[in-house]
Length: 113
Image 1 (tube, rainbow, N blue to C red):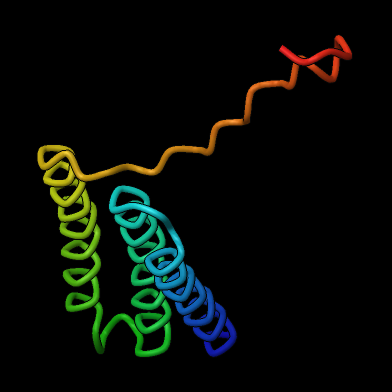
Image 2 (tube, helix red, strand yellow):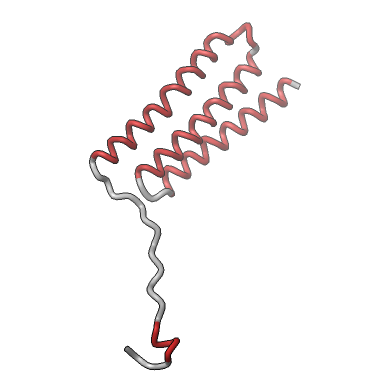
């Protein structure tokens, strides 16, 4: 049972880390990328460390993994916040949704402007 739970946690964590990597490559600006890496990366590392903890057992690596979890959960979101704050202060360009073109009035009235 522990092997199944460990494998499930490791696969979940690896998929979250993969999603963070895809978000880092595909998202348009630094704020979106930072958000993807912070959220998905933190969840992925958290799940991977929990899977490792289940596999190794509490006695073998309990305190070390708990400390690593606490360190990761506190530092990754703080670092992402600082990256976003620096991008905001430096006025880096942000992604804007494309605007729809104005409606063509000549099609409605049948005559050009």
